[in-house]
Image (cartoon, rainbow, N blue to C red):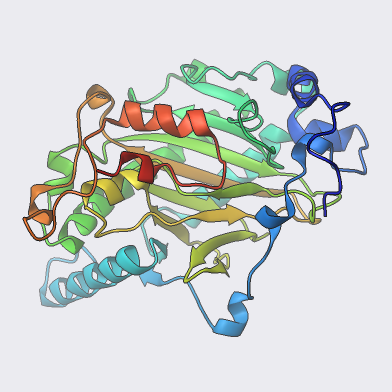
Length: 369
């Protein structure tokens, strides 16, 4: 693995990443330039790259939940919904992750989105550079590593992000190449978000509209990641170990693989299923449920094969409540089980999350009482 000395005074990381960022080309630009070695600012320490016992030997698999019939208005539908709610409760409390099939988002729309993500990132450099920005207030922006200037080591991935927290974007806000496909996908995901809000409420033993009534699953951002093939995947990583700051994340991944979840101190592969979406509990959901539902750390490996494409839709509290204070729901607190977290807003949580970067440590413990 990495053999360089962290105390090497000849190495100026800040200068190197500034030079890299100024190209506005991301890691795809590095690959296009013909690099055969991973630059030093992308090399991770050996302990962050270690791969514990293979999940295959332990026969661990992330739950797959079939949502078909969850809203059928008949006796069978009621029984089916009850079973689905039980499966979601089990997965959210023990895994923090589950895959969903028959979720209502057309497979054709999902495949179109993955194709468009690749097409955007594979455009001529001069076209793509026009969208490059590190300003979180920009509604649509292309960038490489949101925490590039605070992380100890960068990740082998590029991203185009869409911010829908203030409502749908105007047509002119989108790059032309992905305008129609992204907006079409988000229409379906917004409906799925509403349905999952109800199912998660019931899984928590609350009334069906509870999470909707407190508006903790109201707005969305979507980050579309592009992981080029890596010449030295043993030295870097696609996405560092982290948990998400959102209430819930709905992820679309292609067939390349590489996504892993940390379960029982083992890295478990989330095997791609064509037509499936991955759901994972975010930090904010763990906070308001007082640890009933768990946000779990996950990562994406760098690969020699690729490119890998994915789209993560992060679901947050209503944008009009960015500064609203959320704490553990009263139903989950008592004298015997007091609040484990202090109240915070989505703005404050995201501010802290971004300031620390993907450093391999969860942000949630900072907000513990």
